[in-house]
Length: 147
Ligand code: CA2
Picture 1 (tube, rainbow, N blue to C red):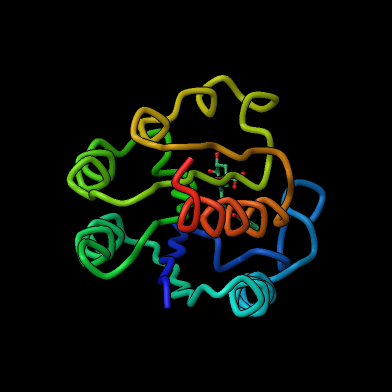
Picture 2: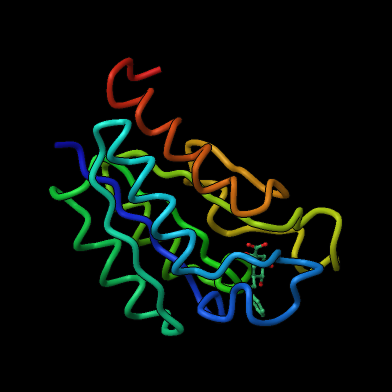
């Protein structure tokens, strides 16, 4: 089975518990379950992880080498700060899709720049948690058609 690793950055463990006006009411566990269910329909296995620690996310990106067809990543605040995560993703040879629940371009100017986008094969922002599912559908498409 094709494996997709879904990585989530700092504070996303609070999803659904705080700031529902920005991030919605679904918890990260809800998103994990929705991804597992859709993945099963699409013939993909999903590994869903969250960390508040930059180094741990870097380790997980490195671990995905040779294990995962693709990485779906919401780097959260590390989007705007992390060259380390960018470098790890550049060393990864599979597909990378960057997801943001909110539309980062409609928010404060410091959220407008992403270090990750230069490596991402696609970017989804402002689609709520549905962005994860759309990214998964895109991974299914890429794994069968490669374009
Ligand atoms: O829109 C997104 O998905 C973000 O990646 C979320 C990050 C933010 O720093 C990015 O600019 C955009 C923040 C994740 C924190 O998530 C929370 C969820 C609920 C309550 C508090 C934080």
